[in-house]
Image 1 (cartoon, helix red, strand yellow):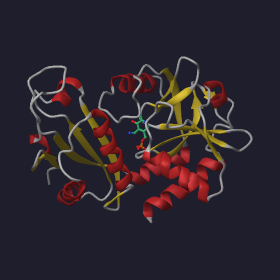
Image 2 (tube, rainbow, N blue to C red):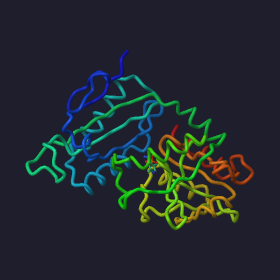
Image 3 (cartoon, rainbow, N blue to C red):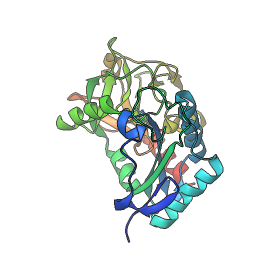
Length: 284
Ligand code: PMP
């Protein structure tokens, strides 16, 4: 069975799914996106993902391609038609197709909606979270609106590639003051030696991660103390634990950063509790 994707009103074979070369998403990365984990056929945290998509579109003045109800239907239909139980649902909305000009089109254009689904080994994600990963730092050279989930990801992919070439799973982005901002596609957390969990505030030019928000709720339920405050690279290296969060990354411990062992170099007790609680949350 071939993969099915949704493109602007049609469900098509993935290999035939195309957008126009004048699409502003293609030309300018004038587009926003979401990535939703599908677990046992169910979309994890769908409503917060839709809230964030609407916020991103609003911030960039991209018109919604359709209302939320029909969009939920399209997502469910893509999942149904692909018969995928565990996957990664990708949603992209671009400003639409218009004659190339940096400024917004002066006549109204339809925004473009693309929805794809690929298999994701969610159990593999959890197994990786039980082992931990290595990461490498990269300078954060992104723009001042990282709160918008835009497809302008060139700095992110360059950082991820650099980390990968050094043998790391993720790039930890560090600003000019020596503070960790986030990962190339993840939010960053530490567990300080006093047991307090620390993660940068979303008011501080980072993506408001959906997994981050869910983990904050889970931590509160587990009575784990969390402060939302920036931490430095030095603080990360000195931390008892470090972990990343994302829809496809759960609460994965970082056990080695730039070749430096974090804690004892194995997943710590706080991250372990969060991974287990997040797995239960996904399966609920
Ligand atoms: N930060 C960045 C830069 C990201 O791209 C992502 C993943 N899209 C995240 C954080 C994590 O967000 P979420 O938990 O919503 O997947």
